[in-house]
Length: 100
Length: 148
Ligand SMILES: Nc1ncnc2c1ncn2[C@@H]1O[C@H](COP(=O)(O)OP(=O)(O)O)[C@@H](O)[C@H]1O
Ligand SMILES: [Mg+2]
Image (cartoon, rainbow over all chains, first blue to last red; front, side, top):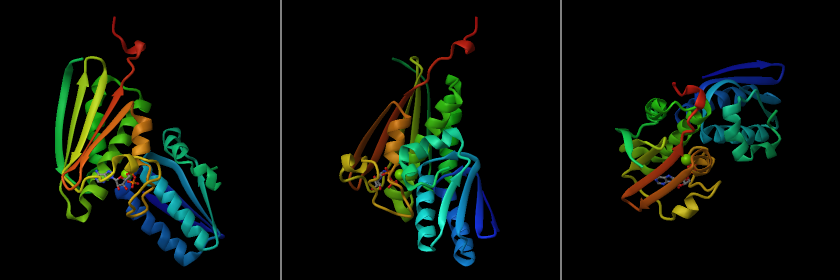
């Protein structure tokens, strides 16, 4: 679901499986708990192992963007598979400048 | 246009069932031999509608979600997702992209996803009675899969 590693101020969360409203609740809690206590400069969300995502995933990214801004850090979204990018494109999330 | 296959499903409005619901509809649609992209579109749209029943229609009190899916002889899939929850006061406003009545980090994009991933989406709702979302998608028949 989510594996988190923190290396020299860069925290990477590798997401996997299905990202829907149900799973977002758990993923969000895990990421926020680590980010709150370890205060990374950059939070990287790695989507390479995500198989499915609905608009709940957009909420997850927007929420982490807000949280990182509050903590004075940055958010990066990487390795988005094609079928999932379709949902991101529709959301206009590119305008936040977090997608790579 | 005739219905050649049909299924009905009812299940508890619990978030754990979101993946069950989209997988069940996706398994039913498999008989149409959809592409992976078509299947992914349908799963995403179903996930949006079912999540809305859980988050908005019933909230914490829970209830039952009903799914009816039909396949026609014109290679179309018609999916109805129904709840007996709070209903929607203003459907047009609810369907606008980014409109949300909130709840845990909602993006307000559920209806936008349904509309862009399916050919047709219609919503019927009565406040305090419930909501029915009907979605249609034509599955393109792939020539290479045609048997001689
Ligand atoms: N089944 C439903 N019952 C009651 N209200 C609903 C239902 N589906 C959608 N809504 C309303 O429509 C709004 C927009 O839905 P949607 O586009 O999926 O965005 P989101 O779920 O992120 O809020 C919801 O915030 C809610 O107010
Ligand atoms: Mg929604």
